[in-house]
Figure 1 (cartoon, rainbow, N blue to C red):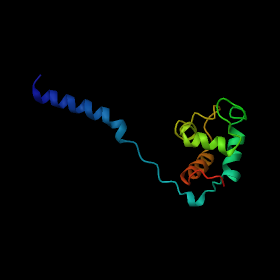
Figure 2 (cartoon, helix red, strand yellow):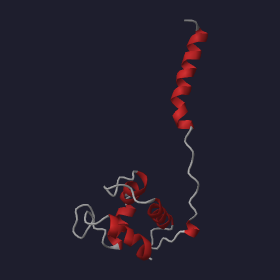
Figure 3 (spheres, rainbow, N blue to C red):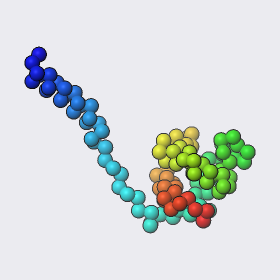
Figure 4 (tube, helix red, strand yellow):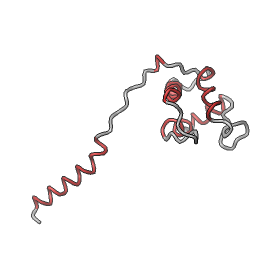
Length: 114
């Protein structure tokens, strides 16, 4: 093979490998000014409906029955990672898009006890 054919082959392989990464589009920024995201009104009910009994009082997986328990999981990154990034929690399937948006806005606002 001459150098020109090698260069063409390497270029084709390189472009083929890069293609899947170049097609990813960035999600539009979430406008949290229009989404309610208070802990007591919005987030606690989502947790109560979707995270119990696995995260109930005394659970080795973390007690999310109180703000303090949830905040611990928020502060160490486990909450966001499991619920919003991996979306492998709850185990029955990801939360609804609406609930994930509420959680994202609550986290973006500092995960306040409000």
